[in-house]
Length: 340
Ligand code: FE
Image (cartoon, protein in one colour):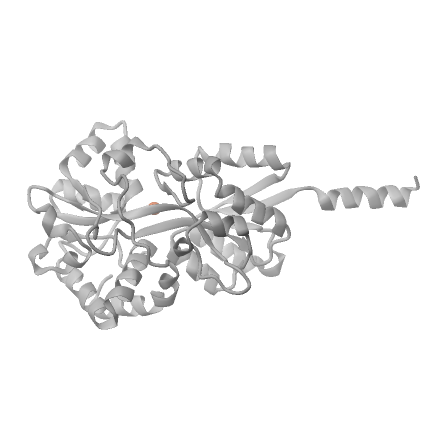
């Protein structure tokens, strides 16, 4: 074998080296098993860049066509939709994903395929103080604007993706005029200006500063699972309601993934997305953050989620694609009604 041929051979071996580059905004201990098992079964080595959602989007933009990213993991439909609208993803076709994941938890399908796919869901629930509020008065999101709750409601910033996504589904259902009136009503009911994260809202209900708040289920689950006495006390003082059980169902959002626009290992990227829909990976992906699996027929056992009473709750089946459609409009509504 000549030197040239040897060099050519090793170069082609290197090119075929099975690698997958993942940019991830999710980092939980349990994820390691999920990644390692993928590598063991496929021989595809995973390089991971961990950053927060904003950091990943900024990095993808800065790197442009030179980006090594193959798969992008982000949290919340609003963030996925925004990154999608900025051309950071590419549509893929996968019969396995089409069969496994409900269409309303994915980006709208186009002839070219689907960009982002949700691999876990979290419900946006209402937490309330049973000493001040009756369950019947917080049974729906619509009631958050009822004057009955004046001075009682706490939320994080209206512009936070978790709220933007919920509000987009509300505006889609109520229409623009009634949707904006609802937002205005929520602002009128606030106990304080929006601040903090979801856990802070739960704490504020427990401390009596607020009587009603919005939170994602996994924050409540974390407090339920906490070893700290103070966290347990917080959850003993509040009640959790899965809203709109008699109507549209409780709003759920997703953590999801997409193949990066300039992916160099597209086949491996699609393979990894399909792996995330498998029962094995679903268990780690969902349970790692106390979330619910998205793949049809997959059930995970999570005592904290069960304790919250949401087992088998009715979830809103609206396509999360509406989030993308209404995001700018909802942000303008928030500005008009003074929802900071
Ligand atoms: Fe969160």
